[in-house]
Image 1 (spheres, rainbow, N blue to C red):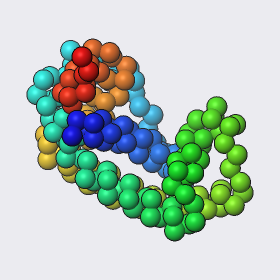
Image 2 (cartoon, helix red, strand yellow):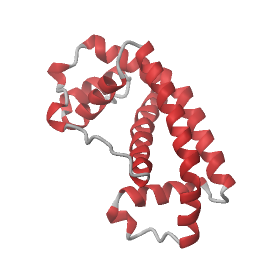
Image 3 (spheres, one colour):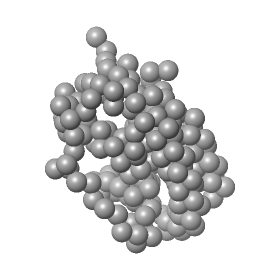
Length: 168
């Protein structure tokens, strides 16, 4: 169960990042994360960490369902899910883009997939937001804590401890 919490946390961050990529492709304005306002360990209470852990656990079934919907949509476009993931990472990472040759046909398939993926993402974000709120946090605060943990090692340790990921 603890490994799946880590997976949920990682996949949520990845999914939200991929969603930003699709939103940019659709030319929808996105607010850049305000890193100067990210919380540090002293800004996050133990109660908030417990809520974050509970929310991460509750997000697992939503993430699994969303991943399955994306996989089905990708495979319906006659792409392998693994290849799709490779292309998405290359589109997000310019250094990797040079290593992954995306054909014109693949670009067309990805473009054809965008409306479906945007719909899946919209539905998933709504469900995730509701789930996080049911666990006592706003989606904004949940994301701030996760992003803050990426910048503050002490907060990262506390999050990992809450999720049962600290290996001794």
